[in-house]
Image 1 (cartoon, rainbow, N blue to C red):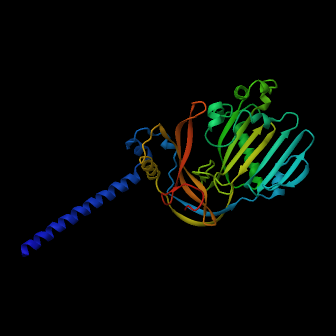
Image 2: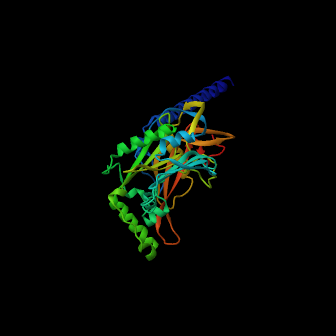
Image 3: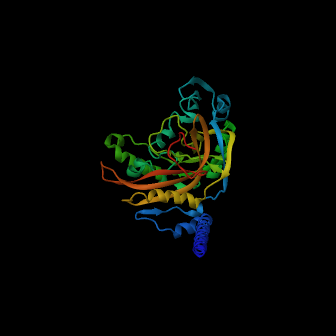
Length: 386
């Protein structure tokens, strides 16, 4: 009987020792996977059919820790902003639903400035209009100025596709660096938070002419009767800025799943047209002022974040080519209860081909997979996540 008990104890000890070794081995594998470089990880994984990782891992910043903040919408002081943006005498002031506004001019030029402090928050809209030859109207036919990848119109009709223009190419009236520098100084003087240039598109006359012809082709004979004439004087830069907090950019594209409500904190956008006449248009909204720091902690690694996306996409069969197109650490604004907060998040852009029923054309649809970089949980909307 005693021998049986001894044998049982020895067997139990062996089992526990083996289990402990297996646990140590699993922990070792887990730790190794956390330490592996993103590029090595992408090369080592076996992806399911029709799922591809196409972004360059060298472009992904590896940041070990970050902070979360309480935030409020940026409130620009109207008189101060008008002082630094308006060039001519103020002709009128008004109050719109979006906030206070100014109209200025000198007979040849008219300026419009609206400060967002109402139904639209955290920014402004500014335009400098030549009453005889309005460049802004002309530009509306040849480019979509919003940040982000081409939408369906840009892909199918072509005339609004900003990707056709050169990037960071100097135009004759100014270098792009000078345009970015001067614009940044003006926006800072107006009270904007820290910004960083994301991209500069150089709108040259030849590409604008080609885009305008595409526009005419979609509109028919009536539009063709009174065509716009283009010259090198119409050349300009489209500059995209992003708000920066702790060296991390705020997301500037609509990332939510489902329907966006107009009061939700989603994309933070700053777009500027800069011509030979300087700044001729600013569209800025969704900017924030930092409040109290509410958390500082370590972030899940890029490798772990990518694994979360892959695990999600493995749940369903991909019937068409699906590409994980880009990956970046951003700050996103969310409502946590009644508090507006800024949290770090891993943002993946995913492209899917879709066929349009009307024309049978195939275009790319872009969606976003956003992961809380503290918790590893997916953020689907800008409300009640954390």
